[in-house]
Every structure is written in structure tokens, then in C-alpha cells.
Image 1 (cartoon, rainbow, N blue to C red):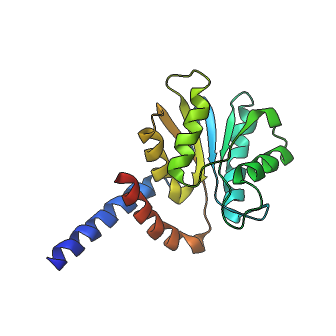
Image 2: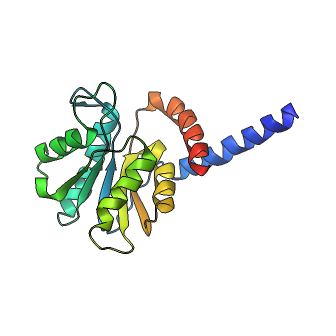
Length: 184
């Protein structure tokens, strides 16, 4: 029985990690109705390396699509002086993005909430089948797209921000458990 359970866990790990790997280099040039950039922690008011990489990965797309609204999604966690969304908006504005293009979703504390709370903002626009461009870390893209579909987005495209090589092993293991939780 123990070997069967271990075998199931091993097979599920391989399958889920393969799915995660399929999205590591997502860079969809598609037109989207909204861009959603997912938060990833700040220290006080300073961006974490991961969050800065996500924002930097979004800049070319945002600059080339100045009419596309950008939702920065992230609440305020422990050790954070301001919501992640505010830190993200400040960074984008410092990079030359117009403040009116950036919409803050500052209540979410998880990827599921990022998608659900951002959808509430988008629903106010009257779009029935919104297509979104998700910007997140490479290892996080598969789960983010899955949760977007689960929340009713019509199409989910993505721009993957590279994560530091030294963090990949721990991020991939952590992501396995997060994907299993998302499937439940």
C-alpha cells in the first residue's frame, strides 16, 4: 500500500512538473483586453527581485499596447508597508507607464484571489469574454493560467519572467504542491 501511494505521488509529480515546464518560456504576442501582473512580495516598500523581474518582463508589451489596461494584483502581507499593487504601480509609473493605464487590485493574498479579484474589476467593464495577458514568473505560469480559466477568463496568454537559476529547484518543488492544491 505504501509503495502504491509513493508510486502515485511520483507519477503525479512527474506529470505536474511536465505541465509546469510547458509554460516556462511563455511569451505570447497575442492582443489581450487586459494585462494582469501578479504580485510577489515586497520588503517594506521595496520590490522583491521576483516582483521586479515580473514588472520588467511586462514593460515591452505594455509600451507596445498603451491602450490596454494593466491590472497590478497584490495585497499587503506581513512585513509590507504598502500593498504590493501600489509598489507595482509606482514602479511602472517610474518606468514611464501612464498612471491612468494602471489599475490596482490591492486585496489579494494568493494566486486564486489575484484571478478572482481582478475578474471583478474586469467584469465592471462589461466585457463578456475577456482575454488576458498574465505576467508572472516562469515556474508560476501554468498554475496562473489554470486558475484564470477556472475563474472564467475566455483566453489566457502569458509573459513569463525568468526566475533565478539558484531558486528554480525550490520553486519547482513548491509549485508542485501549489498545483495539486489548485486542482482540488
